[in-house]
Amino acid sequence: ARHDWAQLLRASGRPTEAEIEFRRALGEREATLGSRHLDTIQSYSDFADHLRSLGKFDEAEQFYRQAWCGRKAALGKSHRSTLDALHSLALALQAARRREEAEPLLWQAWEDRESTLGASHPDTMDSLNDLAARGGRA
Image 1 (cartoon, rainbow, N blue to C red):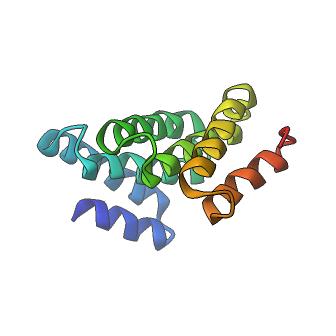
Image 2 (cartoon, rainbow, N blue to C red):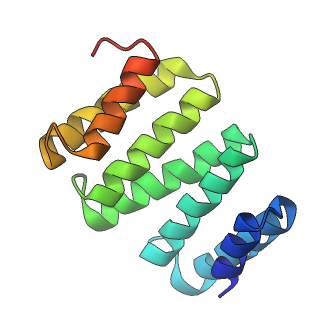
């Protein structure tokens, strides 16, 4: 319930309150469910999205990385949620102007999406567009 409340606060344009509630929700989920539970992993991802929207890229990167690693362990490397988490991590690094770290992950996200979802899937095309926008060698 607290996680949903944080999402509502975020959607209502109350970012400071949302951040507080996201932190509380994440702490509760880690304490009760553990860091490997999919609900906790979803909290990492949603909180990272919020932090990124606030320009807190370094902290967002940490939570995106936890979401990606958690989803990879729980769902496998080729699961769509894992692929989305990798793509989000790459975009966070790019937004933080850490392009040397972002580029290999952008390529990996595109390649993994292409092999798993197909070349014409919208997610694959999003990855390709992100590579093209940053001047990748696509």
